[in-house]
Amino acid sequence: MTTLPDSERTALARTLVLEHGWNSTAYQILNPGISHWFSADRRAVIGLVRYGSHVLVAGAPVCSRESLPRAVSEFEQDCASRSLRICYVCAGHRLRDELASTGLHSTVPIGAQPVWDPTQWAAIVASRSSLRAQLNRARNKGVSVQPLDPHTAAADAELASVLRDWLQRRALPPLHFLTEPDALHGVVDDRMVLVAKMKGQVIAYLVASPVPARRGYLIEELARSGAAPNGASELLIDAAMRIFAGEGCTYVTLGLVALARNVFEGSPLWLRSLMYFARAHANRFYNFRGIEQFRAKLHPDRWEDIYAISREARFSPGTLYAIGGAFAGISPWRAIGLGMWNALHTEMRNARLLQSVLNRPHPKS
Image 1 (cartoon, rainbow, N blue to C red):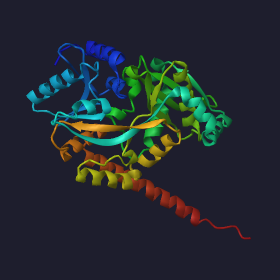
Image 2 (cartoon, one colour):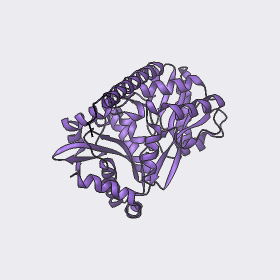
Image 3 (cartoon, one colour):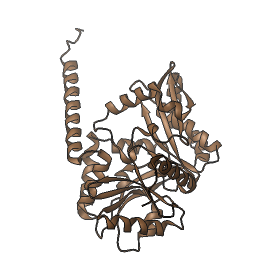
Image 4 (tube, helix red, strand yellow):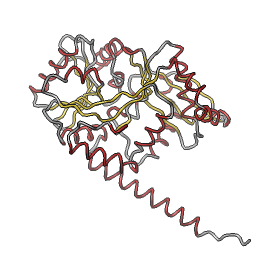
């Protein structure tokens, strides 16, 4: 592993991402909490987090297509020398295809991400009355969208307040790794930030990160306060798509929808059963179906399957546990317990509200 001062490591990682970033998660390796591994020739970088004896890679190695086999081999040899187990999380089909014939890796689909060609976005809006209605709802409430310098956004108190409000309304504690909510405190030089305002106040914002090798962007974060009216999120996405189209981009994704589209066929039986159970019952903790439905109603051109690729003959429960720990930042069991407690608290509060409404005296006719 190449040893460099922190500032040089970040600068080199950014250079490689801007030159070779193909995976939709490529720029996210510059987020807080991500460590960097470099190849000996400094032509490849891998973003990663550690959880116990597991190394969880953020997507895939960032390097030229030709250098990918060599980067994988060098990285895996380095980890093996330190008795570390490896899983590439949120990898795309390029790495899957590269490792398919090695016999050393197991691949499981973990969800899918919607993809658009932004040059076709205006036609989508023109053909979908339901989407136009959502945009008009926000506009009629006085919502407007404007760009904000990302460095200014990182220090903006209103955006921080929107993020806090958004996170407080979630059943689970804030997730990390490739769902880091504090993205604006990482490297922001190449990110795009749009803010939605109503009556002069910020009520929602969008952060997009470049996917340079695919001439596109990942819409990485879409946060809205409880005061944001219906259509505010769509209005931000609409503005972003039109900017991307104007820049000549041809690829935009809103990122992974975990457990999406029943993609689990071919996974080990224990994992397939667990995924189906989670898809059916986990919405009280994380609104998987709602997120999928929201993105589907924006009519993506296609959905790309997203994978976890583990360097083991069969994907193991220990690897799944490590992935959960990387995202939660704490023990997955503790995160589930907190989610259950928050969900129970929310349901009890809603029940009390309902009971108070039912107990109100009805006016006599």
